[in-house]
Length: 582
Image (tube, rainbow, N blue to C red; front, side, top):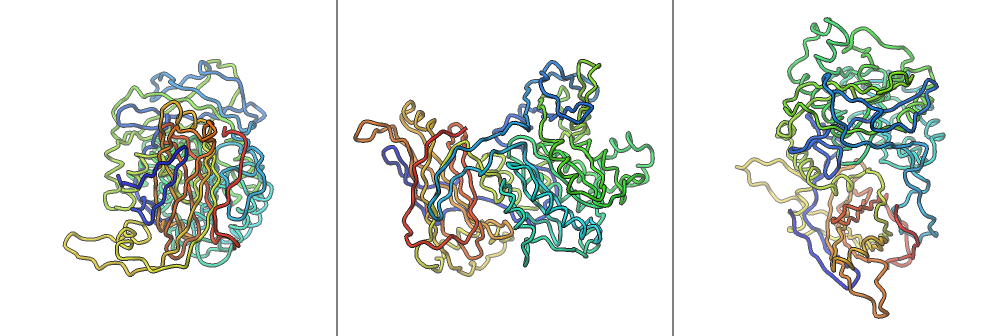
């Protein structure tokens, strides 16, 4: 672990540092192969010692409406036809806001609060527009449909957008501000942007099983560590992703033997589905072709329904109005029950496991959608799959050990378990980095260089650094209680700068102690202030800041798009807020 400066003051914290050893991150242009890391500090994860399998179950009535009011005893769970004991049970109702933000006064310029503008609803939704595997004529038709969906999306729906065109790019991170999503779709220029028409699908791997698996695996690893269910909406003409030899053989018959998948592709299938499982992703393929595919399960017309079923999602076939199909996906996956069990088969040898969920009352005429398949991949196999990708391996290892790494990623959702206000400002003019500062920057993905042991690489060419000062006001009554009852407590402040394509440029993590000392008037301080400095290299487009209480993992996070607005004063601007975080 890196060591960071700590400065404690009475009932407040002041943490100030220049460049510190950066946290590991990745570029959205990379294509790691292999499976995902485990989620850190979450109940629904695979672990080396205690392994739990999470199963999200969507239950709909004959009219397609979500069924509420079921209990743990209403469900029967089996793995490979053997009954499993349900260890935990929850219901997530998409009709009820997951978070309702308190009202806040107008904020001064360059002052930000980690609160959404509307109540958040439902799980996380990821639009994956696969232009490489979409015919050009369908791209032209779909663009207007995509904008129509964004304009009419239900308020509070948290949506992110990935596009596969000349590489996989995160176009817009998770947001409830759908105007930002529209702006990102219409943005022109160098990547990341959404081309009107992408004509190089054959060049970039159309119908390439390995490329499709790699892209899905990358998205799964990106989402690893974020809690709860994610619905991945795959928008495409072709879906070149098989399920797996044994599963495909059972569903499609003997014809699957003639496909003769290579060992590399077979491993890719296993690793990708394991990654989707670990990140609790349900796959929703939405066909943009208007033609229902069938026949060859690994060709241009993959049986979308089987692929979706294996991950707990549902396939939708185009009716020339794909925008309405996305609405159906949002409604289908909004409400669900989550059950977990510890499998009786404790051998995690990469084998294919089959899940069956039924209702104890066989007379209920309900439709259940859930993950029917997972691969029991061992932790060692996860690590081995990234042996040649040093940056990715280090990042996944850090993400596995600490939830902070998932929340500080570019485009991750806003978090508000712990509320804070942050004011950002630049100080002085850009200055040339020192040799020591450039040495510290070498570990950032933007500057990382693979080296052989026999090499003596030359130092990186110095770049100009712009200093940003971040002033925090932290609002968390629970933290005050901890400070009083435990005599001391600690907060973590993380800041990271990214370029327009999501590549980490530099980051810093500071820790500060909060004491239980009282103010002169005898009252306990009701807000906790911190000052942090981040040296930002050229090309920065975003700064993400995270505040966390490591004692209970309560976390707040927000992201700011650069450049900042012009200000007459660069001093920190603070506001008073009332209310508590949910």
